[in-house]
Each structure stands twice: as structure tokens, then as C-alpha cells.
Length: 111
Image 1 (cartoon, rainbow, N blue to C red):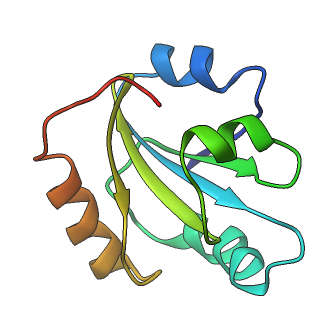
Image 2: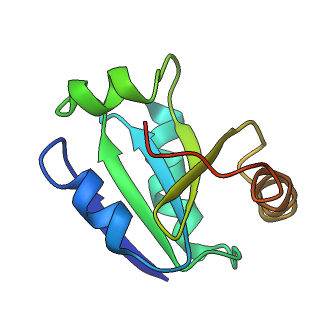
């Protein structure tokens, strides 16, 4: 699975240009659930084109714009449009269902 590391400086440009579905994931080095997600999510066969990682500690602008209050925080982006925050267990079936539900919502501009 393709993976990207995004920052305050390049996230908008990258997300607007990328085709298909991106699972945008905010993590932090001090968060044990984040370390687990970072290790395990790439191994899942998720219906996304890529995983895009954002270090919440190094990118306060994106944290504020996406209103991240807990980590890891996951968001669905498709063809440059924002769809929804995902509230799901970090397992294949739950994430797949949350992504499918999110992508049925009306598209919005990126935060």
C-alpha cells in the first residue's frame, strides 16, 4: 500500500492532486495506539489508494484545521475532497464500513 508523510506545508497541495481515496491519519510519537496504527494499518487490505500520515506534534496548523482532539484521528479524502472523520475500530472490517459510509456523504472542500 502506498504511504505518504504530509506536513503543514504540503498537505493541501498533495491531497488536492491525488486521485482516489486517501486515508488521512494523524498520529504522535508518544501515543501507543498511534504506534500500533502506524505498524498495523499498512498491513490491512483497506479499500484506499494510500495512507497519508501526519505527525500531530509537528503540524499544529493541520491539527487545528481538522479539529483533531484525540489520536489517532482518521479522515476520508477522495479525489481532493474531504468526506468525513472516521470513528471506527482499527480493524479491516470496521474501517472498510466506516470508509464506505463516509464516501456516501456529500463531498466538502478540504478543511
